Length: 227
Image 1 (cartoon, rainbow, N blue to C red):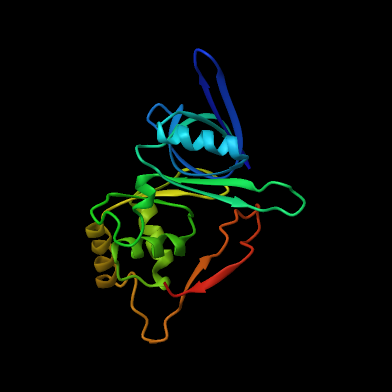
Image 2 (image 1 turned 60 degrees about the horizontal axis):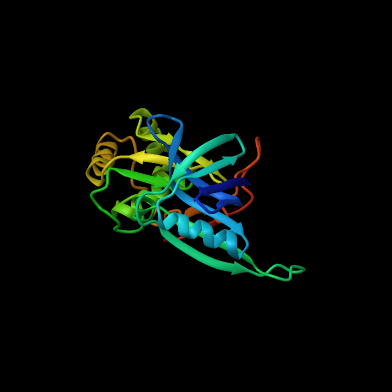
């Protein structure tokens, strides 16, 4: 896990809140010393989570630290989507408060969200997940069998890059619906990829819990999903 810190100094008092972070996605700004946040999942008590929620509405700055992440200044863009809930833990008298904040850009990666987008922020870098999510967002006619070929195209065209992540392996994919359709058409015409003759095509195999595997180990579980 990581740590999120919010500090605010006023004439009468100083607010200094620190909460635990189990998931985060951020993208370095040009100066490399600050970052734009796309996803943040935190836990804390009532006062801590309330303070973070209020700071998000004010577009405040936060400090994020975590595994392989030094102290980094982060901020969300305007109007992030904020979700709050409570988690009851056996042996604990009061529930733990949970807050998830999602940037406007990440929220629009849903089906049909901003169809003219040139950038797509994704939570996981697994090949099949990347192709599936782009297919869902842009309505692309894609198949699981094309995942490896499409991943090679993304790398060859320098259209994918890793983002800062805690508890996940996020990536940024650059490209429009028109561009991806052009790749697919070119691949089929040149025989770089094909539509299987067997009508019983493979189902999408996607991660269920998005756990980051340890070095030299595989994911703990997957599921077959027809989405």
